[in-house]
Structure formats: C-alpha cells, structure tokens
Amino acid sequence: MPLLAFRFRYDEILEQVLAGQHRLLVSSPTGPFETGRHVRKVQQALLDAGFALPEHGADSVYGPETAHAVVLFKTEQHIFPNDGVVGVNTMKTLDAIFVDEVPFPPPPHQPGDLSVDDVLEAIQGAESANPGETAEAILTMIRQLYYPGTDPDGLTFREVAFDHLLPDAPFRRPDGSRRILTPAGMEPIFFGRLVQRAPENPTPGRPLDNPSPYLVDATAERVDLGHVLLTMDAMAHGRADEPYVTFGVPAIDPASWVADLGIGAVWTEQDGQPDAPVVLPHLADGRVDFDGYFHMSAPDADLLGDIDGFNIARSWLQGTPLSSALIAYYLDRDVPGGYRHRFRMFMGGLFGTTDPDEAALTAAMSQWIPRVDRFNDLFAAGSDAILVFTPPPLRQWQFTHDVIAQFFQWLLDHRRTEEDRFD
Image 1 (cartoon, rainbow, N blue to C red):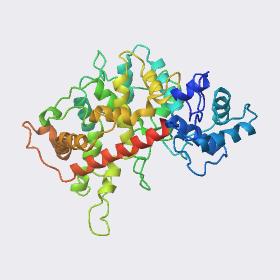
Image 2 (cartoon, rainbow, N blue to C red):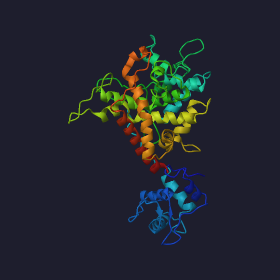
Image 3 (cartoon, rainbow, N blue to C red):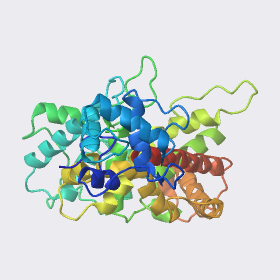
C-alpha cells in the first residue's frame, strides 16, 4: 500500500520506510546523521502535529532533537516500542494523520474558473460526441473555441491569421467545411464549461476579456486552458504560412510565451499602442509602467498555460486521447502527475538544464532576444503584415531584454518553490 497523504506521496525513501526496507534513526548522538528532503517531510509533519523542534526546526537532519520528538509522537499515538525510530508503524500513522489534508486550498471561485475534473469531464464529453475524429482533430476543434473563435458570418482577419499560423492543423474536413466543436451530441453543461471566459484584465463595465476559461490545478494555480491547447496545437503542427514566414517567425512563437512577452515589450515601448486593452498611467516618477504592461500581456495564468502546453505536447503519444494526456499531467494516479515538475521540465527544454547558471542564462538571453524582437516586428505591423512581401530589417526593441529577464526570474523562483514543495 503506497503512501496516500499528498505531502508524502511518491517519496521513494519514505515509501521504503513504509515497506519496512528502511528506518530513520540516530545511530550515534554525535553523528553522522541521515539527511535529505525525506527527513524534512517527517520533521514538518511532526511540527504540524504539534511536536516542537525548538533548536533546529525542519532542517533536513535526523538528529537527536528529531528522534526525541518521534519518541513523544509515538508515546502519544501508543506506538511501541516508543523509541526515536521512524519505521513502518510510525510512517503509517503519520500518513493516516495527513491523508485528508488539502495541501493547496482552492482560491475563491471567480467566473471562468474550472476544476481539473470539470475540464477533463468536458473534454471527454467532446471526444464522445465526435467519435470519428482523431485526437489531434479534437485538440484543434476545442482550440478554435478560443483561437481564433469562429464567426458564423464569415472569417475575420483574426481567424485568417490563425489559419495561416497553423495551416497544417486539421481545421478543415475533407469537404472543405470548418471543423469546429459544437454542442451537438454533448451534454449542454460540458459544452457550457468549455466556452466560459475568464477575467484576465477585468475592467468595470466591460465583458470578461479572456477567450477561454482557467483550469484550477492541484496546486490551486489558475492555468489558461486556451494557452495550453494553442501551444499544443502549434507543437503538433509546426509549419507556419504567410505572413509569419516572411518575418521568419515560427508558428510556436505567436502561439506561446514569446508572444506573451513580446506584446508586453511592444505595449511598453509604444505606451499602450496600438492595441493594448488600456493605456496605463505613468508611474509617479514619470516612467512608463513596465511591470503593469508585462502583467497585462503575460499574467501567470497565461505563462502557466504556455509551459504546460509545451510539457504535455512533448510527452503526448500520437493517437492518445487528449483527455488522457491531460489526466497524466494534471492528476496524481499510479505515478505522480507532470504538474509536480512542470517548471523543471520546461526549463530543461529551454536551457538544457533545470538549474541554469549565469552562463546558461546569458546564452539563452542572446538566443531569444532576436527571436522575440522578430515577433515584435510582426505584432507591431498588425494587419498590414499580410501586405509585406520582403522581410523588414530586424529591429531591436527597447524592452525585449527586460521582459525575457523577468520571465527567466519567474521560472527560477517557481522552480525553487516546486523543489521545496514536491521533492
């Protein structure tokens, strides 16, 4: 029987303790002592159960102070012998105490929030209602609810732009009709979930501005579902058409984090123009509000959707239902869900290491500045980009370095939290 409490699950050493293959104990009062994150998990559990570690706290070292707290815990729980050893019965009792713990209380519900179960149930409903469609087609059908968002009266420029961005995505049926998700064959509640909108940049008196709902994951983080699916679709169908080819912009860049960062750089330099939702007031010292524009264009929910889309697409086996790929990532089952190492997984692909040093960060900055700049050129051109037949000179945008640096720091900060939380 594996450990069930969230704080202990999937810890290999504590699983060995539960199985009777390892014990935590003090062999000598002067050491050496067993150390590691598994020790800190036991120490934190003792603290949370009311047993003090006044001198050292949860320091990841199984020394005499921790052993004494274990003696007190075992005495209270009637575990004998009541010595300072964490073995099968002690581990089983700690696990039982915290098995019903909610590690990350969900945030207050807001419009457009969906639980993981809500999203999975709705996507499974879409799959059941369209049994003849491939997994990739289901992805494209749902993605089009948000990007581009179909217009029954004809294609808008925005729709044409997304068709050109992902020309190989299966958005057309063999008869030429558009392959979109409709309520036909679906429980109305399931379709209703998928077409909800979240308030990304809420403005009084204006409708909710995000085209897709937010998925609230197991860590109580809001994840933009539209960004997850758009990134996955671009990963699956990497060829872009005009005007992206003219500008030398690969399909994945407008579909993922490059666009989120780049738009913030353009808005800051042009002070909200051409199409920021609002023009932010200047700071007290007269400077443009860089942080304000960054968080408008790249809120956490969008960036989490981007990196989750990359991670899920990389492990998605061709032909496997979309819902299965999301289950493997967002839920703990027989193996831990991928969300437990989302930042390290993404950083391994971006930097080639989960723990980049200064040299790796500098190299990545040099690599991505021209790529974000090129996206900025395309974004700033707007609808006129379709009229460009020769690539314009690459411009160096003033705030590109800053938006990338802020993104890299965001990744590093979350990686540290993730390691502390799950390792």
